[in-house]
Image (cartoon, rainbow, N blue to C red):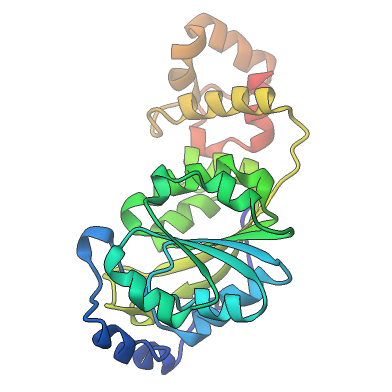
Length: 282
């Protein structure tokens, strides 16, 4: 289940406006953020510092979407071996000049064998990404599938997505994403990043979350069975759990199942706890 750390995780300060010494370098190479890649370059020293702190003592880091290398540079200079996967060819000269100690791979993260890259790094390993808004969902799925290879992931995403991931039982914003991510990870909010933390400023706020893979008491097969029920249960989030999972089991069987579990058939899926989802899957 998600946890918050501190009363006000929002990062503030003049550094949002000043950047981290990148503006001249970007201008030198004639580089501007591409809308088609959903690029918003992080330029806040405060946010960068919080992310690097969470990387901690990891000696191998896989970074997805490094952009000009604001995170890549300090991580590599700490003696950490870092592999950075970047799609945009135009940014590569900036990245290579700004973070010369990093290993740079040009490619589409969704078409790259990220697990193989992660496995090639020394342990303990971390995953870092300022995720493009337009591919956040597929990246989260890919990162979840390779969770056995790293000890933590520090990921930046749109605030609304982070809120869904952190939503607890009873929260109307809770959905299948909330249950799935919380089943696989211990999740903590690291900080908020307002639009001024980026160049150019996006129209939305961002949030940095830390994900630590859980050791599940369930086998992979059992876990997938539970998550199949979860996904079915959220097919139509405003409908009752009875209506949503009847499609899997049939209405009479579902009514009998809920009665046996002493669960109110009029519950909405966002109201169920993880233990209740597991009980249904048994």
